[in-house]
Amino acid sequence: AAELRERLRDTKTEVLSGMEGLLAAATAEDADTVVTAVVGMIGLKPTLAAIEQGKHIALANKETLVCAGTLVMDAAEKFGAEIVPVDCAIFQCVQGCRDRGEIKRLILTCSGGPFYGLTREQLAGKTRADALRHPNWTMGAKITVDSATLMNKGLEVIEAMRLYRLPLEQVSVMIHR
Image (tube, rainbow, N blue to C red; front, side):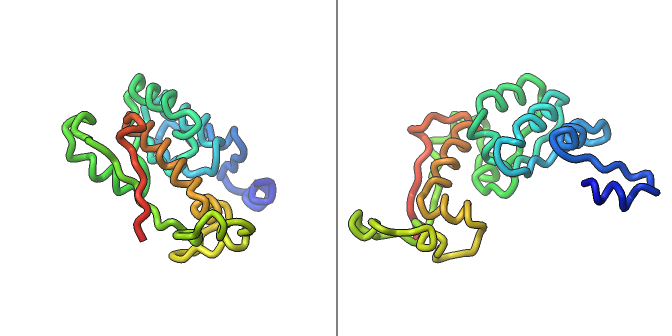
């Protein structure tokens, strides 16, 4: 940010960074939609700030709902902010429901990753390098390890419960190669 500020010092462009920059972007008067796409819990504060202004939220950060989903969804309801998950087929599917009571259950799928089908004995001694050998795609190291261990699927279960206000009994996971 400092380097960019220096390069743009002769222009009217304002360069913001850090939490101050995130909050300024999330609450900009001329923005009606805010895309929350930062990694981790750092997205919570700017998302809540945008919600408090009644902005539409395009959410590409599951951690916001995992760590504070009830708070976020209650605030969205209170301030009339719509939260739309980015890249979520389930959200598209539930748009046909008149109300959430029509949802019998959500089934989240996963491939099972590189450890699919291994016994407990075969899993002993597996390494990070083994976890990074995903059979279907290449992602960053964290998401690949989270996917291989099914931790990511656990986070998605929490996200779905919060976003759609469903009890755990209505959200399940199926390994589907």
